[in-house]
Image 1 (tube, rainbow, N blue to C red):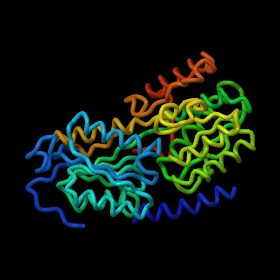
Image 2: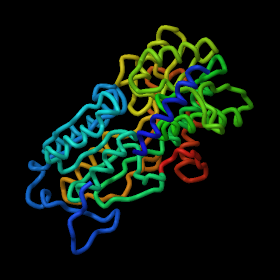
Image 3: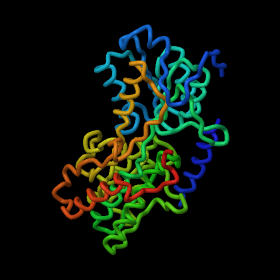
Image 4: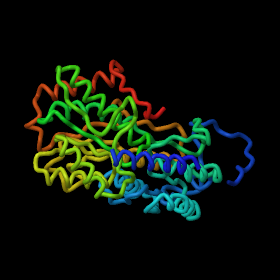
Length: 372
């Protein structure tokens, strides 16, 4: 399968960085991708009969980041919409397929896979079950040659996090005392590298605007090479990587690695004078490291999951991709919280101006990893 092959390749590259179907039934008319589809289950029952299901990536529902945000969206749908729910936590990539199959066997009306690496099982399930709806967080769908494909019953839920990470990079460059900042990823997949691309561009923009020479460790955007822990679970690897960055002088670090990032935060906390930029959720609120969190690059995963469940439970599901941007508030920069008084007003104003320029299209944050 595509993602399995791809994951094997990126794990190998990560190690180097650390050292440096059933057929669809006949229908009178098949709706085009993006058009509303209504299943028999949706027609016959209301929200109380609707079963919404989610399958996690590695790290589980209490990762204080990516998976947890999606799970909160599911629980909100249960509370506000009255739908039923089922979920499955994946401990490794070997769990993805069986977990998705389990949701299908339980009769889920909508099954959402949380993460790029769940594309293959979600796509296979969508092909085999055309009368059931599916969603996929952080990836679109593609064929064996990685050409884009669309399904009437499968919705990509993706985020242009490069835009918000650009602002975070600018802030980091403006707040560093050492002149060195850093970032690293869990695995080199598009939904991770896109953060790092935006962060690199933000640092470069600050240097351009202010005549400075802030150094970025951990990512070379042009070469698309950098530092990766190799997975989204090994907190010790995140701690080791971060200790290495700190030894090289970095005093602000953005880990894009799910729970691995908590290892990075532990290393930063132990150093005493190092700040962390969180990702996915607002780490000031979701982790125990709020006192060292400068800001976070937030993806509104929970809201996107809730909205997708709401549409599907009401019979108005569409396969049109959801793309979170600064303009639609699907991504954003979290408040500075405890560091608010330390961030110069001039820097705050510059970041606000950059955000408006990005929304207006005057600045285009480019990334080869951006969702299309």
